[in-house]
Length: 145
Image (tube, rainbow, N blue to C red; front, top):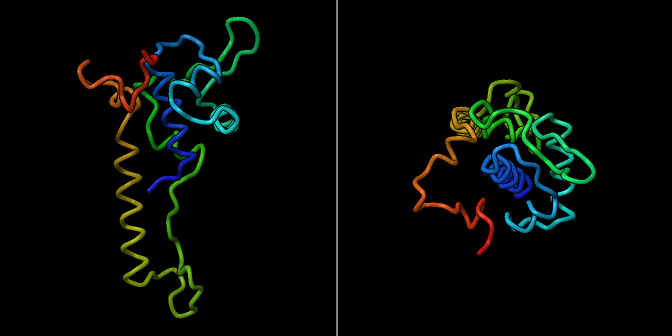
C-alpha cells in the first residue's frame, strides 16, 4: 500500500513526535526504529526538504519536528517521501479511454482516494494516543530495554 521508504519516514516521525521536541540524532532514530542508518539519512533529508523536520548540527543537535504532531498528518509524511499514486488517465494510453478510466483502473483509483482520505484524516498525535499498555509501538518509540 505504501512504500518501505514511506514507512521508514513514518517510523522516524512518530519517534520524534514521542520525544516532545527533544533533538534526536540519526543514529538514535535508526537504532530505535530499526531503519538502516544510511538509508534513514536519505529519508531524513527528504523530510527536511519537505519542511517536516528541522535538522541542527553540532553538540546537542539532531532532528525535531517542524510542525506539531497535532497538525501533521500521515498523508503529509507519505507525500513528502513517496506520494500515493493516483490514476488520472488510462495507464495503457488507449485513445478510446483518454481521461475516462476503465472499470479496473477506476476501482484502483477509488481505492487510492480512500487511502489518501484515511491518511489525510489521521494525525501523528493520534498514532501516539494509545494506552501505556500498548506502548512501545512496534518496539518504539520507547528506547530498547
